[in-house]
Length: 558
Image (cartoon, rainbow, N blue to C red):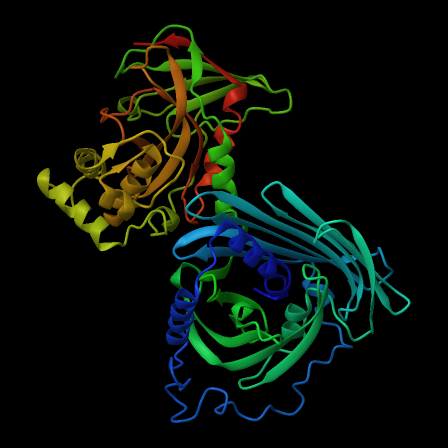
């Protein structure tokens, strides 16, 4: 991460982990550092790289080229590139734990040529005993060359929130903060060459570093409440994996505070334009990757989902019997005046709007989808997206492909047989191998569910879509509500299933239930390809409104 990661949240995270008992000990820290040295190709004992012979990494650095000094009086980002937005996802080990977000835009608050720089982050902190959440929000107003006007922000760990406000006036930075306890106001000497909390990012973008270059920066750290010196050392361009395992040629840079505190050191990888794509903090085993917004928000959306009660919705009207093959007519109504219901007339259901908050939904069983249904929205032919392998729908994984092959063999089918026969064979293969459990608030990809031998409806949907795609069958995920005919009190619950395309239309398919030809027992809210690592945003669209919905069965047709 650019400067916000180094300058704003790192000290707070260290404090948070120490308070939670999560900080690595000296032995663990050495192991993490050694692992990182191996990743970038530097020998653990001597610092020898594969290409530097007997020299240390420091000795092997070439002379800094002429003209690479950061010209701090120059504009650091072109107006044509504004607004500029950047998202990162953070991993501790193999688990996503948070995100970082930055937005830079033009502002007239301090006159023409002012930039507003906004940054926020969310981090889930865990220990063996408890879990807490770290949030950082920061806004700074600066000139186009990075000179600071003022800044304000908050740092929250759990329910404890600290704030900071500062402004530059008459050669001084006046700072008011309660970061260290009672609110205090101090004044620090400030020159036009001093920089704010985004200094590292600004320096790298304004004047991208060259191989072998060393650079020293001084900036104000709003968390520590004082100026901080850091040294940046650029090594070489490496082909290194970025988000989702893709490899790019990036410059590896060591960022070290000039305080003797090696714990705060980190590596960052930037492209030739100085934009960061990846970082690693050995002391915390923390990796960050540049990504899209939806992927970055995975931890936040999952936390929001798990905070919801997710209770079933009581259903009024005649009772539906299990595996009933008739068409059903439902009434769905929102009792929240601020939320207008919008459901798709797609796949197996036709929706009519009675009022903005009241819909009538006619649902057809899969067995009735061989004929044309009046009222369905026209859909384009399936694209390559519904065949692609992704983190959640991992169709290219060897174990998924083997499962698909074995499932077809049992039914004496090959890839030349009809699509629907193959799809139902794959469904049967998963149903016989994977136990169905209640939704546990976490969605696993296909291979993980297969390895566990158990999963909820969302896990089943991802696994079934994975096996379909691995066999060349277009597949996507549907999310909505399902009527539980076996429950003592009629109700609908949050549910997910798979849809496959038979060459003409999309057909619902579900390996988490004992109904091969899916009944008209579900109401679809949305469908998705699940081509990011974040399934929770799609689930939230339904879950957060469930407590404000009423559902009735209006009619059951034979």
